[in-house]
Image (cartoon, rainbow, N blue to C red; front, side, top):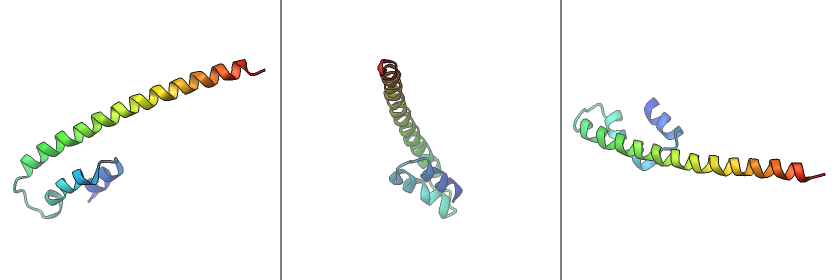
Length: 76
């Protein structure tokens, strides 16, 4: 359950976590290799999208920081 909790806290969509649930709750190893590979690809894709969003937000934050610095200098 710790794996599932950490995946939820990471913001991973529930639909992806649901795919890994059977392998962590029923104790069987049937088909877990194929599921794990696909799941890991999905998680990597999610992480890549998240990184891209963070980069955009960081750029926006930097632009706002620059604006505020300039606005404060111009304010008498």
